[in-house]
Length: 65
Image (cartoon, rainbow, N blue to C red; front, side, top):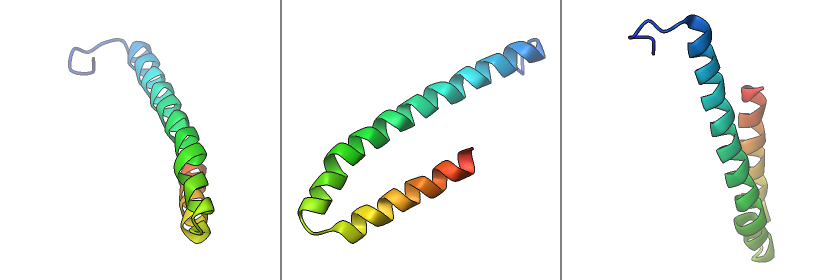
């Protein structure tokens, strides 16, 4: 769109839509990870690994906002 010199507001609208879509994918992946992998890690005694992963994701989310 930029190369085609599209109207600035149209480009911003599209980039905003892409960001929201990617955020939705991240949310779904995190929900899946928490409800499957993290639960299994906790059950199998790997709570330190599970906690480290959750903190890593939390810190990434803080940078996003």
